[in-house]
Each structure stands twice: as C-alpha cells, then as structure tokens.
Image 1 (tube, rainbow, N blue to C red):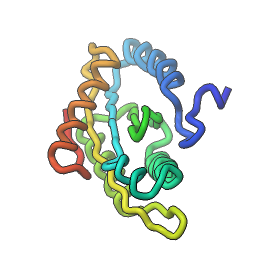
Image 2 (cartoon, rainbow, N blue to C red):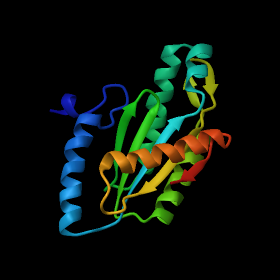
Image 3 (cartoon, helix red, strand yellow):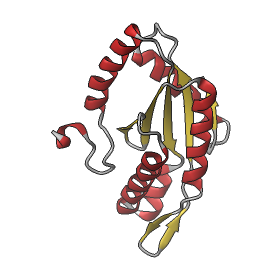
Length: 164
C-alpha cells in the first residue's frame, strides 16, 4: 500500500495518492468550507545541478529538498512529489496570507540547507507559486493558478514566492 502511494526517491505522496486524497478534501469542503491553499515548488536550475554534478547528486538534492519541505510543514498538510523537480503542497485550513508565509519559510529553509553530495555542498534554491481554493474551481484549475504563479516567480529571478 505504501509503495502504491509514495514516491520511492523522496518518500512523499505520489500523484495517484494525491488524487484520492483531494477527492475526499473537496467532499469535506462542500460539507464544511474551510480555506485550502496550494503551493507548487520547483527546484531552481535543477538541470544544471544534474549536468554539473551528475544524476546521483540530483537525486540527493531531490531527497534533501523533500525532507526540508516535509519537516517544516504542519501535520495536516500534504506534500506530493509532483514530477521531475516539482513538489505540490496542499495546506488545509490555510488562508492565502498564511500560505505565503509558509512558502517563504520553506524557500528560506531550502536556501539555508546546501545538499551534501560526496565532498560537495551544493547550494539549492526553490521558487514557489501559491494559490488559494476559491470554493468552486476544479483542483486542476487551482493547481494551474499555482503553476502560473510559479512561472512568474521563475521569470522574476527565481528563489522567490509569487501569489496567484
């Protein structure tokens, strides 16, 4: 069961598990509306890390970033390996201002934690897009808005948080 719901490398939930959990979350929201925010985080210049230091170092970076994210999230939050070097974080009971603060805390924590890969200490940063569920949109739309904000963060210079 664990193998079917988690990403082997990062130990985070996978997209399949996320789909099941979000269906439940949306059903709960219809019964008792509470704020929900999504953070979409992407490791900055990950391809360069792989190209310069190799795929084993890239894997070490993915694992380390996942650990930082998981340690700093609240117990009610969900962390998902979204694909490649992207992570999706679902924050239950979280207004946009608090989600922005959490995203900024995560961004700073990753930047302050160079990844040990052999004898190297690889500096790593992330960019994060943040959106808040409007109560009616689909999960795809909510994530799409976070993705748009992530794109803006990348275009704005990386290592930053942008809101949808």
